[in-house]
Image 1 (cartoon, chains in turn red, green):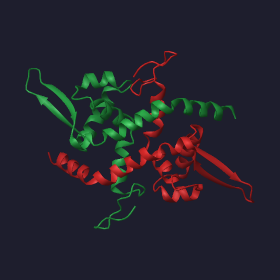
Image 2 (cartoon, chains in turn orange, red; image 1 turned 180 degrees about the vertical axis):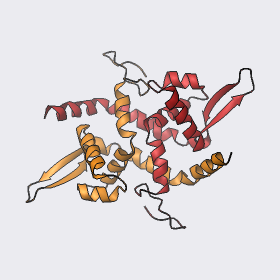
Image 3 (tube, helix red, strand yellow; image 1 turned 90 degrees about the horizontal axis):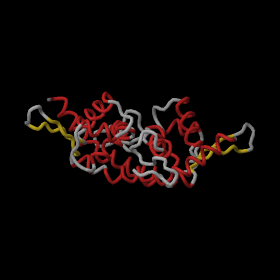
Image 4 (spheres, helix red, strand yellow; image 1 turned 90 degrees about the vertical axis):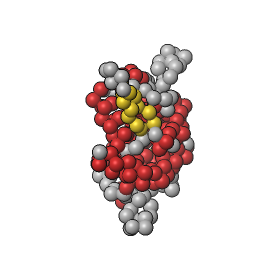
Length: 124
Length: 124
C-alpha cells in the first residue's frame, strides 16, 4: 500500500497500481485452471483443452498467450514434422502453484457450505 | 477430480462441477479485493468503495450481494436513524484470508519479474 522508490503506487488496492494489474491476471478463472493443469508438467494445447472443461479453443489460446507474455509459462516448439508445441510453467509460474493449489483445495472443501448459504439466501 | 458419493463431479476442472462454480467466485478481481479489505474488520459501503480503487458503486453492490449470498460476508443493519449498514467476513470468509493474503503478497513481490517478462515478450 506504499509507493515504491520511484513514487509509483504498488499496492493491490490502487486502481493504477502495478500489482493490481498482476492480480487481474491471476484472479481469473481460466488462468488459475491452466496454471493448475500445467503443475503436472508440460502439456499440449489439445490436452489442456480436454482437461480444462468448458474453455473454448479461442479462450485457451488467449489465456496461454497472456500467461506466456507475463512470464508464467513457456511455449516450446519441438522440431518435428509437423511441429509440436508444448506449454510448461516457468520458475515464476511454479512459484504460484502452492497458492493456487490451496485455492482449488479450499473450493473443493467448502463447496457444501457455500451451497447451503446460497439456498438459505435464496429462501429469504 | 473424483465424483462425490452422489456421483456429481466435484473437481475444479469439470465445467459443471460444483467447486468450479466456487472457484468462479473467488477467481474474480473484485471479490478478492473486497474480501481482503474486510479482513481488517467491518466496513461500510462508502469506505469499501474508497479503499478498493476503481470499483464502481454498482459493481461493489453486485460483489457484496454475491459474497453475502455465498456466505462469505454478512450484512448488518444498525438500528439508527438513518439506518447504517456494515459488512464483515463470516467464519467461512475468514477461512479464505490466508490464501488471499498470499495471493496479494505474491502479486506485490513478483510484479517486477512480470513487467520484465512483458517488456521482453513485446520486444520480440
